[in-house]
Structure formats: structure tokens, C-alpha cells
Image 1 (tube, rainbow, N blue to C red):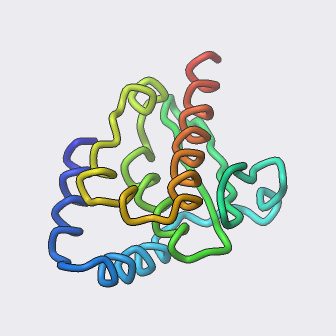
Image 2 (cartoon, rainbow, N blue to C red):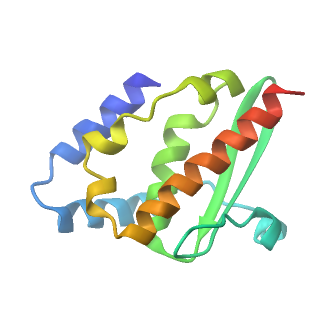
Length: 136
């Protein structure tokens, strides 16, 4: 997981200002694993986000795989980054991972307060899925 976080830090270091980084986040939204239409419901919606965000997870052969969607493209890029780092990991790996790339790329510092709260809510929900799978 650290290699993926280092890759993300390196990718974002190529941009000098946050307008370019936002453009890059928007481009990442295309890489988001699609969530099935039946999971675009209130049950899968994350509370605390400025925009609507839906996240689902499944456990296959001991590893967690996420899918998600959002009605905001920057938020889609953010969740795509989180999925890139956490997808295909064991529940315990997800619970133990420090997502240090977030402050390293300046993400929290350059988000509006409501988007920053949404980022925290997305991470919390992804970890709740991992915790539920770990307790099975």
C-alpha cells in the first residue's frame, strides 16, 4: 500500500498549483469502479458529504473490493484515490493503513471545510466495511 501512496504523492508533485491538481483529480474520476445502480440508494450513501457519494464493498477471497459513485467530479476523483490505495487488501490491512498521502499532497488543506468533512466520512465508511468483514 505504501508504494501506491508514494505513486500518488509523486503524481501530485508534478503539479505546481491546486487548479492543476483539481484537474488531475477530475481526470481520476474516470477510473472509479462503477457502483451498480441498485447501490445508488440512501443505504449506501455517505452522510457528512457536501455532494452525494455512494460506496459499496464486497469481500472476495479475504480481500475487500470497493465500488463508488458521486454526483460531483472532484469527489469522484477523491474516492477514486482512496479506492486505489485500499482496494484488494485484507480488512486488517485497511484498518491498519495510515493514509499519509492525503496530507502529503495537501488534499485536506485545499478542500472546502464541507469537502474535508466528506473526505473523513468516506474514509470512515470504507473502514467500517473493512471492520464488518474482519468481524465475520
